[in-house]
Image 1 (tube, one colour):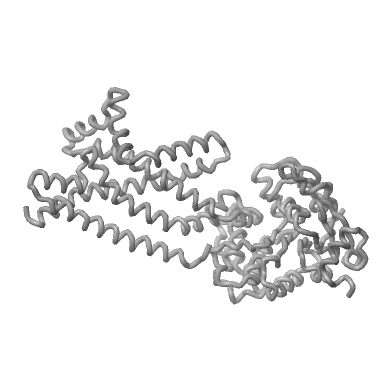
Image 2 (cartoon, chains in turn red, purple):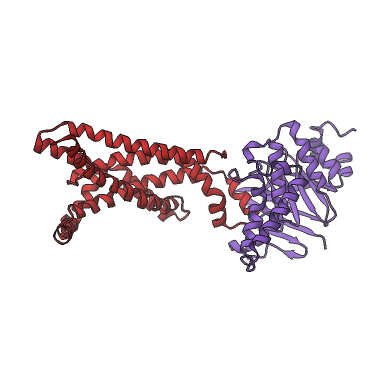
Length: 231
Length: 259
């Protein structure tokens, strides 16, 4: 295989990595918000439930969570949902790994939503009471105070920890190969196994590095954009 | 009936009785200075008036309307709050908004709720901005309209906070130790602004440690101690001839009683 062919082969895998990255970010980031609000709720049972979920999801390796999501429907209910999706999509649309990818997306979204929720919670709780009270004495509603006063200050404060988490996310996508999803590392391992080529495995690092480089530039742009105010 | 009447106001935090029955009244246009040591209940009193805390008992009446009427849902509280304005010790400007935006934010949000807003949007917003600029001129900061709070000194920030409170034309404007967070050389500019706001129809309540200011500007002075009004009267009475031992003890901490 030529260098270009290897690159194209790995790029196919990296597309899957990017798909996992994008879906996790697009679904996990909004999902983190209700979880954060539950964790801050004054209603004790809801708060406790939310804290326990966050504890479990953050306390168990993501790889194990992928296994659990993927295997539990089959083991517990004798209904291997994701294998069935795999087969269905392969036969009807010729799409490979669809069920496995869905399982990975679910595991990743839940996992990252919990991490994001803690970042949101930290950001929201770091805003001083005075900001809320200043809004209230001006006759604003709770929702106006949150949307018009607190939110942007929270966004400013959570950009650095979110950046960290987002950069971790693209590298975590490699975990999908534990259930044989053809992301970039899995592709490289396949080359090692079938063509006895080990260098593509190391070459995959370049793909991650380039993507993380782009992310870093974008995120620091966002950070700069919010640097016009302090607080 | 007086413009503002506070009767037997009580507030307890847990087991701590912070207000043990506070009574006073103010006529329209009067300036009340509340003095007293930390923990005497001054700030809690202001916070109860502004509904940042809900008083446990008693009554607050503004222009004959009793406010502690048992209607306490968010919308009711919001309406009641608008009787009062509050300037905080720590300014609490909104950092992401420019000075003018800080002043105009609340009027704009209130205007958006009115049914005719969509039809006259441009005119209403222009009006709010114009009013905002006038208020900034009043506090001497028209040239800082486009600056952000982090670019201002503490004294300037507090003057913006005053303009922001004025933007909703509250009937009664409250100040919670407005100069306590400021460097001594910056208190003058803020006190001058507060003094300039004294007009026949603007009632003001100032919690302050600036005795000189209280003496010169206030029409009425209240000395609070341990959750009650220990002494009340004109500045001449309270500063010149205090009756209560507690008041005397408190005022000897400040070396102006003789002059």
